[in-house]
Length: 281
Image (cartoon, rainbow, N blue to C red; front, side, top):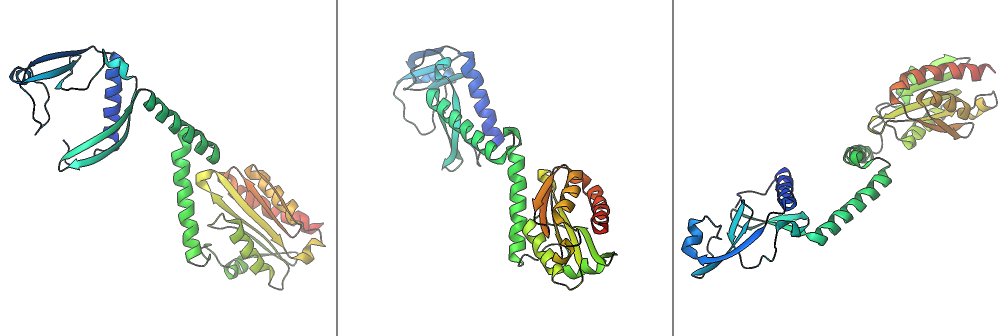
């Protein structure tokens, strides 16, 4: 009997205790006696159940004694394995635990292990890190949904804001910035807005995926700058090397990634130095 649903931790404790008892392989003893004598011995009886004058009492080790007509074991070890697969209410204040035993329990554990291995491989993390990775992925999905709901404008900055913060370098508008999203599509959209302005511009945007330990960056330059030696691929690769990554693309638009988000500030400083080198050629 239990007034509420059994908590997950309690189910785990019950399962562990049952399996400990199974491993002890205590003997199962069956005896027949008057129901009055069974009550004196403290045998467990189901409330509301009608019993005959002579009852079958099953005793397992020194921890279980109850009236039962269907146990066919010589010792508890013959159960093999006990695996809980469900818990439900059957009446007010009464819960039922459903479990598998023996070979069926092994098959259940095997199947769960197979699923965990497949999930681990799909997420590219060890099984112990699967819950954390799923939580991180769910957070990212929720963030992306918010961006879609707002028309994809949740970038933390606008093209005009970046334009006003730009530096002048050899007559080129140089924009290097970390933004709140690590979505390369959103970065490219922002870069396209900046490149539509008349002044020659070179842009490098970067964002962190801190939970996954990743950095995403996109570089774009006005097409007329490519004729002056400004190459987005060379630029983004030099910057990505600082965060342990690499990239590729076209001379006017390139993308890169990295594995060290904590080095992004250092990488952005390198971005300015590399832009100056490329524009000086």
